[in-house]
Length: 292
Picture 1 (cartoon, rainbow, N blue to C red):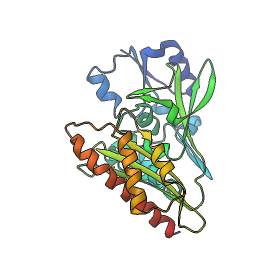
Picture 2: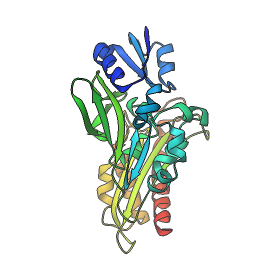
Picture 3: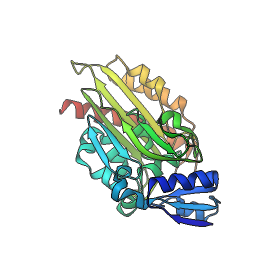
């Protein structure tokens, strides 16, 4: 296996054009190292891109906020978790970044690595989905394109990224007025573990703060890929967030899920805990909006 330590985006795109599907990109390497050592990744070349986050290519790791947000794909999770403006505008994303492993992992793990791995239990994907995030991709042959994150995710560990493309940034539009967002992670320990269930909610209320103007819900750990629960969103829109409405929405979410047992939790536990996690997320959002 060849190893290439790259120092520029142009160099990375050139190597991707040369190797195509025979290359694997590694930045922090928190997941890729295990996959390589265990033989699950058998690429002919490892393209190490961590150094692209510094110097003239800081846009690959920078965080820019102006209403919405642009986050470089090489931004590390610790920076996202601790950025005050991310915490205030995109609280669910900051929370997810701060709960993804311990601080050692967060200091080197990247946003792009977490998302492009397309794990069914990737922490950062649900908070990005509820914000209508778009992913920016570059290739040497075709230049840049942006894709809605929901379209980018195609299945367990499968994405729309072409073999010669590299993710460079994530774009989040400005949140609506009178809104709040949260991420609730169900896990057995406080760190160093994937979620048993992850629930992200973005809630916007009407001018009287009485009814749901808009709700976005995304789930991880309950299917082959994190997903938006659009039927539940439709049920909540225009209605007050009563216990009855929340219960109906939770039923719609569960109907969309695929619950499976593994070493961390049973399918029945996941099915039981999901409605409670969703209801808790809604209550946190309404409390946050009332406190503005």
